[in-house]
Image (tube, rainbow, N blue to C red; front, side, top):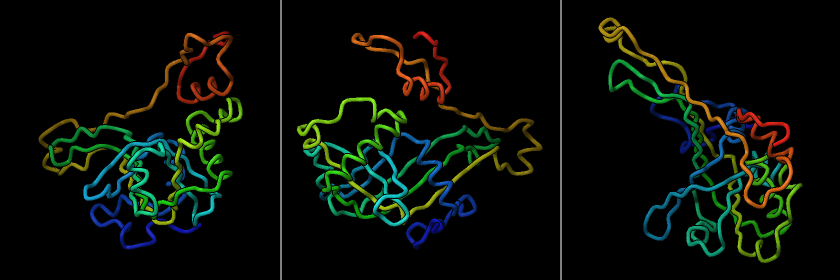
Length: 229
């Protein structure tokens, strides 16, 4: 498995000691996070948009493939076709309450992926990518729901970005306070943050118990789900 930061563009400069080079850590972040932000040149101005995503480590691109999607009618999707894009994924794990404003910070895991966005034209790959996105939110869900229609597939575009050129930066723990600040102020630390789910809420058309795939995902995220719900 190739290490991270294979190019000068993704080699960290400032706070390089917080950089990680193990691709397994990048994969763990991409497995946990739910939203990616895609940055691109939208025709004379920069544009950054949030999007659902999924990763296929056995995909056609070197070191794995990151898939993102949008409407075929969206201007940004068409602007991204064959263009160089920047995809970022961030999870905030805590608030760092330092003894000075300069050292106040957040604990985080953040990835930056650079690459050329390839439009997924192959029907099988596109369907596979869309299934991965559904399963990224609720693992196993794609196999239990209706398959997309031709009309729905025609309205959906999928872009693939290779995971080869990427960087990962992680901050953990408490503040890096100066010794004088520690002597003058008795407390510094951090507030851990967690993503906690509530119990699944069915819509007006729901009948019967919560499906097993939804129940497992909710429980994985910390929800308490009644057996007969």
